[in-house]
Length: 408
Image (cartoon, rainbow, N blue to C red; front, side):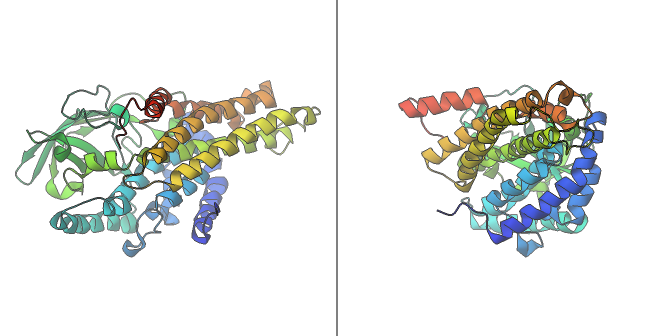
């Protein structure tokens, strides 16, 4: 069994690590303090070709698959977790249009049309530096038309009324990362009609400056402050047919057939754990800027530091295995491992970032050190759907007892 990254993966990991440590980390405190979007990080991502990380090579991108993306995202998070979390939205759109869509069943005519549309989308990313947000969450999930969409219990409140040449879209999205910052938003909606719900799911490209689109509300959260995750309101927004990111019906089918999709969020928190562990060591040894002189009781803190490393490596091992199993229609045991990996990372990132401050002592809680920011950002892990800790634990228990059906 070889669990080592490939040569190409190592190359991309190294590039991401350099970006994160040499550029993103130096800006992270400022963006966190001001709750501002890291446009400068995205300028670097564009300059290094990383906006095309998950764009297939035949379209001019770097050709990273799902597994490779997760390995790279872990590195980016060590520089700025907010940058990594927002970058995840963009990369998932690229992957959904590309290799994941390629693995889904699709009529020949729909596949040919999708090929034409995605080629134009990829060209905008690679040549023009476009990037995407993903406004999936809704503040009040209502309607019974999509009750069979089991992963995370997601419901559709955003509707699309078919008109000549396109759709009229209405709805409100919640916690939209990159709110008002991304040029485009890959927006789920359900077309009004009487057909089965899954046939009516849509995934539409909505420009941020389209008439009827707004991003209202304050943004002053506890953590992940540079994600700028405001609400997104869509009022009578006209979206042309050519704005379909996926063919009609494919979004709902993909959401069920590829349950690993949102496990990509965990890569950010795995990287955050690594940053906290490295930061604790730097603080304790006096290597962190403005840190006290090396602690006289450093040896006595060794067991606590070892516990942090154990939690980090255990979470990483389970997560990497789960990510390596990601595919369309995975077997039930792979889905269970994905749930377990997500919950393990959720728990561990809070424990490790909190322990980093405790081990280093009271002064480590000061904002002059990044350990305090890591701990705040870690609290967002438990909010990452669809596998919140309570839901995943319940589903795992039911599956183990044979009380529930596996729904991918």
